[in-house]
Image 1 (cartoon, rainbow, N blue to C red):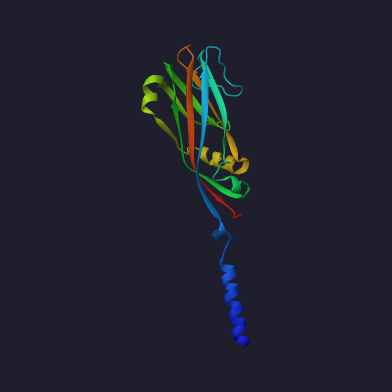
Image 2: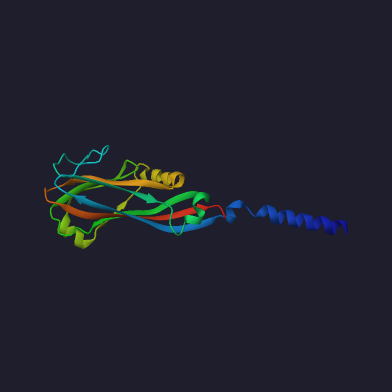
Length: 185
């Protein structure tokens, strides 16, 4: 009888210690999107702190928005997330309307340059829906992952110049495919 009792305790101990906390983690897959709606008029100015490294044009533009980790997929786990991985980060410039000319721009995440385009033709390229993929050069995406993990958001900024004094409106849509690991509820 004693042997049976010790056997049950031994099996129970193995069972309960073999379940690690990591096996209970929740894996979340989500897509974060943020639009930066730029309205550049002849009187537009750069935002403070973002000096365009492209050119010193008379026709600058700048727009910022917050990319948040908090969405329908992540909300209930937001304070339990312990790892964030950006699987793919892209952006596209679209909805030029009647704008014409070219633009050159730099995309920032929390004031760190992550990508730039030069001499993009407004009318021609808008119809082709060019998608720019941001690759992790110099740990830029890793820094974004840390900001999303620690702050649950980051600030995206597009700043640059356009080739004409005419008003130009367009949208920059930033999309991040995210994988997050969270502790169980």
